[in-house]
Image (cartoon, rainbow, N blue to C red; front, side):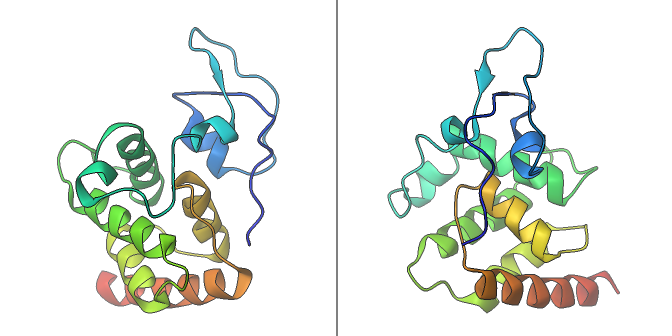
Length: 153
């Protein structure tokens, strides 16, 4: 599996996406909201337990919005649910014991405006509280970037 961010390092709720996504950033962020750890970010997530509706609500919606902000900067989360829906489908696919790599890649490619690399897949997975082996993550990254580049033409 891809390495997860050190769960003991505190982060702010509003900055959670950036710090969960970026491995190696540590220390305490200063502000008025209580610190949040990567473990807390995923504390309520139960792989395979969310239905389609639950996947688009509450804390999981926050994770999806954070991922969309990373993958498609410049798109306002409130203006379109397409990226959110694709990311929810990606998350659901990655919850499976043997995810379909091509389907997962298609979901990422559709939701992303940035180049999809192995590091990006790792960041997305950490933010969405899912994991993949190195070979699976690499296959998803390669296929997703090829599809994204094709769609961008």
